[in-house]
Length: 397
Image (tube, rainbow, N blue to C red):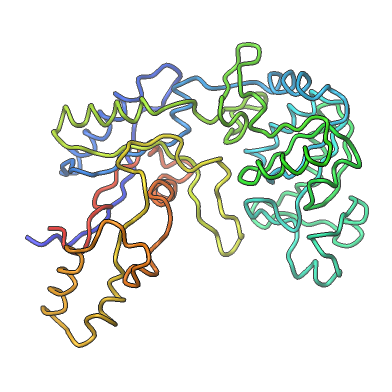
């Protein structure tokens, strides 16, 4: 019988995860229980995905703001530290800033404008145009910023992040000075010890600052990239991908978890005879047209995945075939012609006009974004996602 349903993404409920839990067993048991309750069967090439949050929790990958402070002081000297290009987030960055300030006497905070790296806006381009400000070259002090633009609260959170970040630094016991610039070298007029907090452009920023003569340059990926006072850590990403856990503790991005996804894959094969793909996912990568936020505050969408998720989609555009190659056909003839094209497509469609308009992104980024939207970030209680039909096409029965 011809299949009538394509891709289905389902959130799977599981117990609340605590440090030391056997996450592979919990994931497998939860997915199999969900399959039984919904009357579904596991199929070959289903995808099982686990949010990075519960992976890090099971690993116990936590650290305190004091651990951050001690690492910052050891690596940057504990005097005046330039903190540049942070994202605007109470959950993602404010607690890191608290630790940085605790490990410094003064923080010179340099913010991108009109928005941060992931799209959280301080201002609009229209405001800059009206004020005659060029964000690519102009440097603004806090006083000049307020003179031109006054107070600007975030559209969704209602927070004035400039005042908020200033208060975080002061309450941690450090002096604070704030400026606005999109040029990394601007900070060198204030200090030569710098933490660059950008995520996806961090390598370029470090290179520019080092070439310009900075004494010490650390990215967030260089802070807590090893244990401090016995803390959790992430050897590859440091503080990148971390989240607030309590007022004085962060949950770090999970450490190496390739073994986890492979264990889940093997266990499902043993219990069902089906070969599934498994991944750990964090933030998706998509843009909100209203708030302009493009979401990806983690260093990667997926820190671990099974080998079958390597690569990009290899798809033909049905509407291209229908409007061009088979424009003279309709009904059953059109369906048969398109089906034959799909069945005979090569393994690499790069450059093929019939594939234009298909999404040129990594499978893990696409699937991770689907998972992030399915699980949400609140109280849905479904940190495991089970996807069926993702690798199906028009000919799958």
